[in-house]
Image (cartoon, rainbow over all chains, first blue to last red):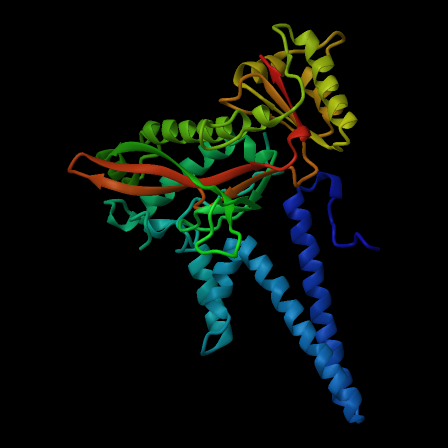
Amino acid sequence: MGFDQYHEPPDELPATTRTFARLCASLTEEAEALGWYEQRIAVETDSQALAIMRDAQGEEFKHFSMDLEFLLRRTPPWREVAQGILFQEGDIVERGEEAEAEAFDGGGSGSEGSYEDGSLGIGSLRGAPR
Amino acid sequence: MNHLLRSHAPISDAGWELLDAEARERLTSALAARKLIDFSGPHGWDHSATNLGRTEALAKAPSAGVSARKRRVLELVELRADFELSRAELQDADRGADDADLKALDEAAHQIAVAENVAVFHGWQGAITGIGEASPHEQVKLGASTEGYPRQVAGAVEQLLCSGITGPYGLALGREQYRTVVETAEHGGYPLLDHLGKILEGPIVWAPGVKGAVVLSLRGGDFVFESGQDLSIGWDSHDGEVVRLYLQESFSFHVATPEAAVALKP
């Protein structure tokens, strides 16, 4: 059960992909916990129990956000799309469509480079073909 | 615009995409160290040093009654390979030519990849201690004949096990050694490449710039490449005929466990 996050044989996956999968699984678990606390809080009437669960949900906000930030830092195209959607004003769907188009259609490379820092985005090659 | 000044270059967006893709392809095949060691970063062009967590005593403090120490850090180094391309060739690529002459870019990419490999595996005097020179293990000779390769590689793996270094293990092979391994079939036709792969339980990589071979553990935490600015193409200058560009990166390299690798001499 502990290795359900892998859909391919773990031995064949590079270390960076295994880390990515672990953090994706963690992100999912934090999101689930947020939903559970939201439901519990909605029906609880004891004020002390409510305070404890609100405090616990606050922890999950933090965990979810840390997982997400890690994944975005390690995945430049995802980060680029997210930057066009997160903390932006206006219609979320429109922002999403625009961000996707910018990242994958017209975006990338050009004089500013494919990645935020203008680099070629090569990074680690663990698991790359020889 | 950042320090690479790419938007100053007389190159279209499509031209930049072509150059970035070409560089990425050439670099990915030749950057052997990154296929075997830990990579941290990129931490940015303004990142100048790696924390070693170590200090050295200072003879004097600024005033009486206190002692003083100074932090030791590993300074990042910069590598840069300049090249120039014909503007006419890039304009033809914009018209749809699929055979633009990018030989100068290819050569620069190979040169900077070789420099990175050499720095990591063999060291760079005054700047980086390489894996081979840090290793306390005896450097055994691979020998001219490939018949001895399985024995030498198995011996290196056994040496690592004796030092408590677990696998899987990887093998970086110099150009000549790699070519020889790939073309060789042992008695019975079994490819030498597959035999070595079974001994190592890890990858065998083509490592231009490496002299001989290096066997190292892939368990992680032993060899750390810290990237400041990862490999990037920047603009230097241009005139009516050519545009002068460069490939550049900044990094440090640190061997945390010297006994986690064995170098094999050619």
